[in-house]
Amino acid sequence: MPKLRHLDNLGTARFITFSSYRRRKYLLESGTPELVIKHLKEVGKKHLIKYWGYVIMPEHVHLVLMPPENTKLGLVVREIKSKMAREYFSTRPDIRNGCRIFWQKRCKEGGKKDE
Image: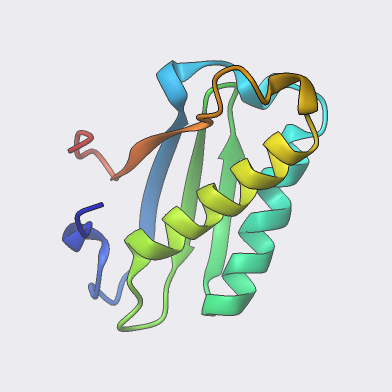
């Protein structure tokens, strides 16, 4: 995956949005928002991310956060999405033979369009 350079090294608070695959309403499922929050906290603690707020919608997540300087924020978001999706599919064996894609590949920052 190419680097999301526009997310890195600005030294400011950031507004990030990432969406479920094909904007499916996966985040309405029982327990799924809690998985997102769990992995936001775990990965945030690991990378010293300060969250100022988040909103979990039926098909996307908004984050307002402050990363430390020199943080590769694109990689942090990818880690959150990857860990959350792995746990989601590991607890749903009935989905194993179906679509196993939870998130869109990219995220977007502020008002910028997905690249």
